[in-house]
Length: 344
Image (spheres, rainbow, N blue to C red):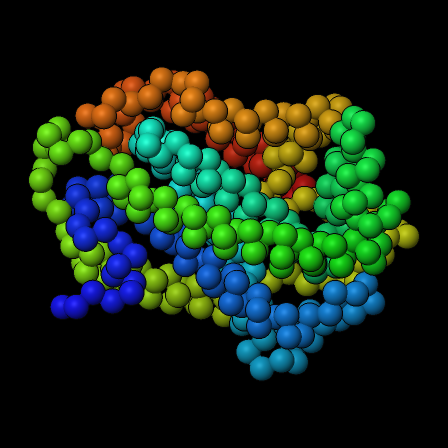
C-alpha cells in the first residue's frame, strides 16, 4: 500500500508494546481529535454568535432553538471542550507516570504543559462568552484575582477587561482571546508538539539493545487504529450531544450581585475552594502558579527514570515525581469535589 499524507505524519514503524492502548490510553490522539472538533463546531457557531452584551445571550438562544442542527453543534462544542480538559489532563499525567518527560523530550513536555494550560483558559473564555447569569461570578472573581497581583495587577486587570469594571469591552476582549489569542496559539503549539514527538523518536521506549520485545507495528496499522478510535469517539460524542444540552441562562446583569449558588467552571472549582482559606493572591494566584512551575521543572530538578525503565508505567527512577504529582492530583480532585458538593 502506498503511504498517504496522514501515513507520513507517523514514523514508519513503532514498538508494538508501547503502542498498546493500556500504555498510551490513546489520550494524545484523542486530545488532538477533540481540539479539531472544538475548532470546527466553534467555526459554525461564529456565523451566528454576536459578541455584544445586548446580543450575546440572545444569539446563543438563536443557535440553540432556531438554527437547524444548531443545538447539536453547540452541544458538541460544549461537551468536546469539557472532555478535552479531562483527556489533556490524563495525557499529562500519563507522560509523568511513565517518565516520558526525560531527555530528549524535556522541551516537548513543556510544550504539552503549555497546551494544557492554554486549553484551560480556552475553556474559561468560551464559558464566559455565554454572557449569562451563570457566568457572572466566574468573570468577576476571575478578573479580580488578576487585580490582586501586586504592582502589575491593576494594569493587567484593565487590559483584560477593557476598563475599570467588567462590561461590553470585556466580552469583546474575551471573544478575541478565545478565537485568536488562544485557539490560534493552541493550533500552532499543537503542530509544534506533534512535530517534536516525531523528531524525538515517537513513543518513549528503551534503547534498542535494552528492549525485551522487538515486535513493531507499521504506520498503516497505527493509522487504522487511530481512524477506528476517531469513529468511536465521534459516535459517542454525537450520542451524548443528542441527550446532554449545553447550559444556557438569562442575560448577565453586572448591576446585580452574583447569585449565591454561582460558582467557577468545574475545572477551576479547586481554586474557588482555596479562596475560602484566605488571601486571594496567595491561594488564588501564587499557589496555582507554584504548582505550574513545579510541574514545568520536573524534568530538570527531579531524578529521571533510567533508559531501561522507559516504556512502562511507574518506572522506579521517577518515583519522587510520581508521588508528588499524585499528591497534587488527589488534592485538586478533593478540593473540586468539596466545592461541587458544597453547593449542591
